[in-house]
Length: 278
Ligand code: BTN
Image: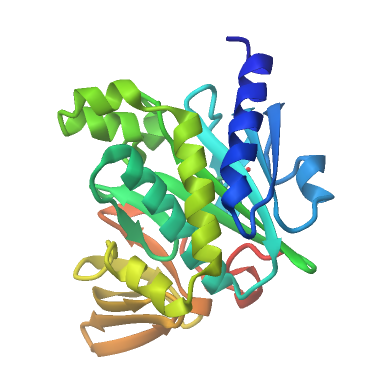
């Protein structure tokens, strides 16, 4: 099938899927775009629109990082929704992305606070939230069919296909399909956006990958290292350091190192850019 024909199928299936959605009602499918966050179809869109691409060539991640070309292997989509506190949007997006991954894998995945979906400490999906006046652009990337990653990502990234392969799930591997993952994501995010904070926090905690692990955090007071005792995704984390327990507020904290890997460069974080707000 040509990309143009595939896009028509995607548009048809997504239109069907969102007929039962409450918030996400207007799918737009592009053949190719540098970034679904920046496409004119996203920039000028009203809340309820979501823009996906058969291929995204130059995606953007958090903290100015890049998101690898999805080629014909990954899902890239930006949902335009009414602005809400970033912590809540991050939570809803992470839970929805995790649920879409779980439905494809038939087994559970983790969420590394605030919004990375991980399996065995490797990232399978990421979320980028940008506030734009009365709306927010919630970008979600899911690695679906990739069988390898560039060297610099190989230790940190994985895909649903690699996980299914490692788990010896050959039939699931055969059936993995980007459109199905996307349809599940749309349904899950629509439900998450309508869910109570309590429901979302419960769904997060059931998948919390940070609790009980050691991590290095960037905070306005400098780096803080220790064992994560608890995570409240809307409020903050309790970390046991050499000097005792510390509470790190969600709005001014980010993970700098975890699982023996550098996640982001250290330095204090301006709360205004905590979620790459723009
Ligand atoms: C991260 O983990 O750093 C966030 C990655 C977000 C990637 C998605 S893919 C769809 C949307 N378009 C982009 O350019 N970025 C987001």
